[in-house]
Amino acid sequence: MTLIRQYINAMERCDAEALGRLFAPDGVYHDFCPQDAGRAKYYAYGAEGIDMFFRNRFVFQHFRISSPVIVSDTQAYYYAVYDGYHVRALATITEFSSDGLIERLVVRPA
Image 1 (tube, rainbow, N blue to C red):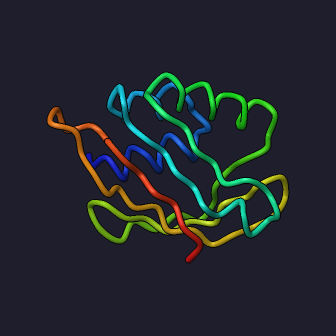
Image 2 (cartoon, rainbow, N blue to C red):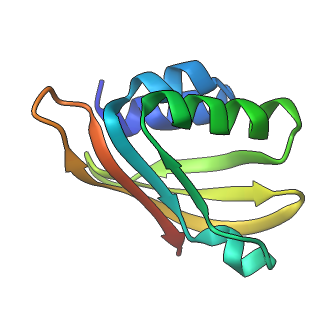
């Protein structure tokens, strides 16, 4: 199963631990979509940091995704919901680590 498919599966299940495991120890998650909702962009660094960041978002229901569509081995569209504000988003894995994990994933409004 591709990393983008695993990323989507973890996001749909609101599984922060599984999401963290997809990233390299120094991996980066960068999401520009919250700016459309008048909030600060999301930035999380490191597998553990990404796990903790999303654990908070999922537990307190500040973030979820719906209607994902995988478009390639590195990209997927979905609707991201930030505290009730919906944005069509494009997630792109832009870099991989030498051991095949996500080094950098960028999410932008689509």
